[in-house]
Amino acid sequence: MKKVLITGILGQDGANMAEYLLDNVALYPEGLEVYGMMRRTSNVNKSNIKAFENDPYFNLVYGDLTDGVSLDKLVKEIRPDYFINFGANSFVGCSWDMPLQVFDTNTLGVIRCLEALRKFKPDCRFYSAGSSEELGDVQYSPQDINHPIRARSPYGASKAASRHLVKVYRESYDMFAIHSILFNHEGVRRGEEFVTRKISKAVARIKLSIEKAQKFKPLQLGNVNAKRDWSDSQDFVRAVWLMLNQEEPKEYVLSSNETHSVKEFVSLAFKYAGVNGSWSGKGMDEKFKFLDTVLAEINKDFFRPAEVNLLYGDSTPAREELGWKPEISFDKLVQRMVHHDLDLLNK
Ligand code: NAP
Ligand code: G4F
Image (cartoon, rainbow, N blue to C red):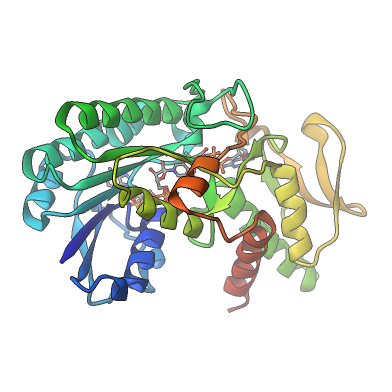
């Protein structure tokens, strides 16, 4: 029986990872059991795990990355074969407001996971999610695994530090421990504070208001000229599983190998909702309009103290060496997110 412990189960990637494994249980004749770790919060949101919460091979367990006792206890009791750490404070925008909490969760949390495994299950394979945000003000494009760390946010710095820690444990204790550089990845389970989901939800709301001839507030955005390399999270979890099942613990970049601006995302999202519009104006006066109707505008509240202006990945080694290939294009991703949020509003 293979046991997989996943942190961040109520988040986007944790839920997609668990669903991917549970959908493929038949591939493991020796049996596969998935343990999803959630922390205790006052108002739990289980919407991302609704589809598989009652699956007989799925178990929900309590634990917290800021509490080493809880991680020790889980590792001792479950004795996982794979430990996939998707838990984090993952929102770059708030990492200036709570840098200590971000480091406690994203960096010390990784030490706590590694220590629990070192003490109680050293042969467990460990994966921790790293980020293209570690690369910061990039020096060249596209960015590969050798790009220097130039973090621009407390979040980026927290992930960079955790990358070093994973390497230290791998080399010091001969553990199968990897941290890979994940470029942005989205989908219908994406949190609403991230720009893609904020856009798809607002576009659905605005589309409905237009249909009902009701007044609406335009979508408010910060730096719409930032460029990101966006993929679908469902494509990434397949690659994470391939990485965990290599012979040797090698680290990879996962990316779409394309880059698009926030402005492009907005234009495409409105297009898939059947709303025409175009960008005009400059700087703080830039607006996305249909005739005289403003659909999206700039709001200084959404700018960051320091911005990562461009991310553009090169995942060629992952494609060639792991045999991984993303299946969902940028266009398809935007279309799926917008149609999903339209369906939610029309229910
Ligand atoms: P997400 O949706 O924000 O999920 C993160 C999960 O971590 C949430 O379920 C959250 O729990 C949990 N968490 C937060 N603090 C915790 C703590 N102290 N103890 C235990 N769990 C805690 O993020 P995601 O998009 O799935 O990302 C997964 C991982 O990949 C994260 O490490 C993220 O930093 C990294 N990453 C993501 C991207 C991307 O574009 N999505 C790119 C690069 C790297 P609650 O549900 O209780 O809040
Ligand atoms: O969607 P975002 O908040 O994602 P960001 O900062 O790139 O971080 C995501 O990707 C990282 C990988 O590079 C992950 F590690 C991290 O966990 C997270 O998943 O913002 C994307 C871009 C930024 O340049 C931001 O300034 O969109 C810009 N933006 C413009 N207006 C906005 C907004 N971002 C947000 N969240 N909200 C806005 O209104």
